[in-house]
Amino acid sequence: MNLEANTRDNIEYMLEAIKSKLQIVNAAALNAKSFDTDQYEDLRDIYQMIERKSSFSVSELDAIVTELGKLRK
Image (cartoon, rainbow, N blue to C red):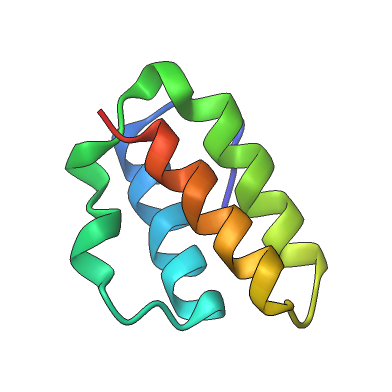
């Protein structure tokens, strides 16, 4: 998938991948409609970082979820 384009579909794709990889229990907290396209680059950076790693510590998970929370509208 080409994630260079700032589209709603790409935001949904990245959030689904993040939820799956991090096994987020409260998936409703990462609803694509809650994210504005203005934060696309930041969201893509988080997505790319998550895709590169195979596992995460508790503190890393907490930091990632905190950053995603800051990006929500």
